[in-house]
Image (tube, rainbow, N blue to C red; front, side):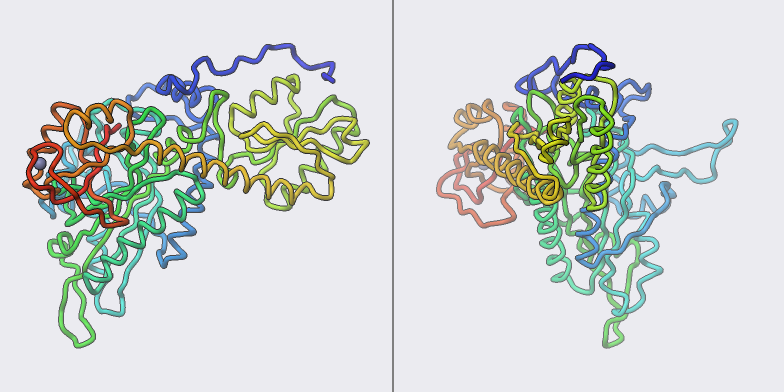
Length: 489
Ligand SMILES: [Zn+2]
């Protein structure tokens, strides 16, 4: 039954199928109203309520995990005095090409010292750490901030994937010993698993990056690589063992239990919520549009009235309050569009569950609940609505996780030499192969892969030891490690 006032406007879905990934991705971002791509500053994104609500839920889950592991929140200034910024040599070299500088105010009056818009906050926070940390009692210090950072990207920018401004969390930890810092790196990987994989449904492998691909200023970098639907690799959270590379120039010292002065050991960890949303959009969506895992959906259940009788309207209101009281994000779509139009629209926006409320349903006391991922419908008695929404929501998340895992596994291939590597890379994903080394002496072989195949050596697995069986796939010398190669965004 169609309401009399319903407009007859025909529903315009997505023009591009997901197999045409790049076009699909931009189209779904615009049409599902995640962001508006028409802003007139290149690389800067206007975020609309649909993406912000999802990212707020993602932030909350990530921050809960960080706090469970002993981190506390801070907010640091967005600007970093040049003096701080230049303290760690490698870090400066790595970041200076991308820094936005604030150099003047008002009508062109120069500042006495240039201020960097933070591209990352090591050099802001560690100056304060050197004032805050005095003795072993102040350690470990584990702080994080959710914030925006700015980097002048010269590569082509893409919404939620690469921008000149993005939204992330950075955690910065300081310890008495190197051992504790190494344990923190492992804990960072665990947190990534607990949140990004188990709650957002994004599978990954943590790689220890080759020395030529480390974070500027780190002793060691570990980064989670994910695979996008077009077979390209997208780097997600990374964690870095900073050693004492920053604590020495910043003089972050403490007195140990014996009263001896020592320098702290540090780590930093950066889950980029903005970019994880790109993986969520890409990984779970289909030809009809987005599909959100239940816990991060901006709206979890959309209630669609069929017809506009008073009893239907009243029932929609009652069910809405009941779901909201049980902490389910629900919405009644009482716009004047046809039910069919609404179904399509909320499917495109990725709402996990749809509840249909018409006169028949009101009379029988049983309501049709439809799943976004499978399209399956079931009749649910009113008294069971809350429980069924919650269990169906969990089932949706679970099934998204399972199919994402299957996609990921299917896209890991093996190669023995350059030609089989080239063949495997054409299919996309990660290619596993024997390689000489991820130390400096392996760099010439990595350069060959980069020049010939436009792909990168992502590193060796951090989660398990893999022994090479034969020769380096590039130079043919005895292999020292097993690496994974992929084409990056
Ligand atoms: Zn080699």
